[in-house]
Amino acid sequence: MNKLSNLKKVKVSQKERKFLLENEVCRIATSHDDIPHIVPVAYIFDKSTITFVTDYGTRKYKNIKINKNVSVVVDVYDPAGENKALIIQGNANIIEKGAEYKRLYQIFNKRFEWVRKDPWKVGEAPFVRINVSNKLSWGL
Image (cartoon, rainbow, N blue to C red):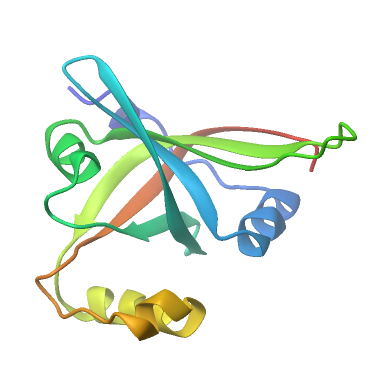
């Protein structure tokens, strides 16, 4: 059974929400066969969830199909010691089509120039939405 799916959804604070909206890159950690895998992705914070897009052939996509438990970190390093970070653990859900897919695509298209430069169609790349089950932040 998926341990994180049994947890209640956690709401982020106003400071955490502001931090998530001010940034656009996070690192997503997935795993397969107890082997961790972490990669940077562009994300949006929408409806109290973190959402990113991936390709079907990626290791993270394959891992999420097997194990929906993921972790995300959004962080800002400051050499003066004023570091900021938000770590999120949650359950990943794949969105491949439908009205929600189209809505998310419009948000990504508006926010990210790389989407406008290299658009894709439904069926070419799924969105992954992470529901927050646990979180820890500092410096915010």
